[in-house]
Length: 335
Image (tube, rainbow, N blue to C red; front, side, top):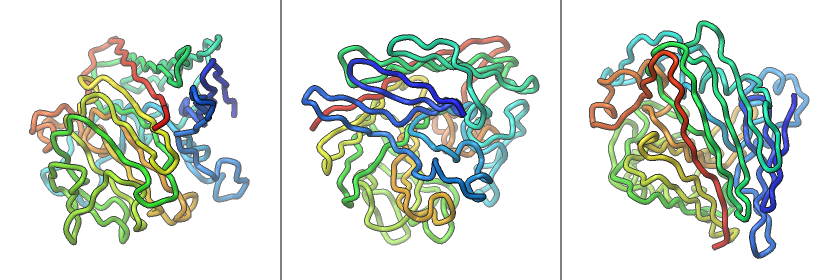
């Protein structure tokens, strides 16, 4: 499958056709160092039957891509009654959206920038997506825009899905999210027999996330235990920084808080043991979100879900033919 290269004076990046996934990204810092802050699935070059059977989104998992709509196509089972969904039409059957599993077309490829587009199926409420990735001259930073064109009036969750690499040393990286007013733990089981965070509870600080045995600080990663966790943060002031103290750099994502009023943290800490993860994948997804976790359109579009009822939007409302655009930045520097 095709991939596209983007080069500017302070970095270089590859973009996969499938999902328009960005990564790896190499940022050239002013002190001469080069860092690669986004995670890349190490199984991308496998040639096994197991690899062939993977969904497209996983075959060559890369560091960042947009999800429209975000999350599961149907209500996950075994959730508390207060998380019930409502029927959703025209939002597709793909986890994280049609654009995450299918090939995009490169429509512009100029110096330091690439533009990709994808058309959605005719029966989908979304007509298509457009994604521009541009290296900022003189900076170790990318400027990225996402344009969503609605075919029909719809209400659906959207998210950005950057996944950052973590050092090997436990607690060697720190998540800094200014403005956090609180958070919520996933209302179900993230990974059976593995996840330790207590489900469906609110918390005030990432330093004290409730578990079955007390609290745990999810601000310092990786954790010393094998686990898989999801928590949703509220009130983040448009920027989250991952300070990699072990490797002396920081990486960040900056976004429009009015578009993405939440941030979903996916802590993948060797907790997934099946192929392709094999109990070895360690990374953190820092995902600007307008939704209710990754529970998908049926729950996120229901104004009665607990997050929406608290006053935090969990779905993007689009009218027929509406064109919606948002921009965000991913960058890095030394610490």
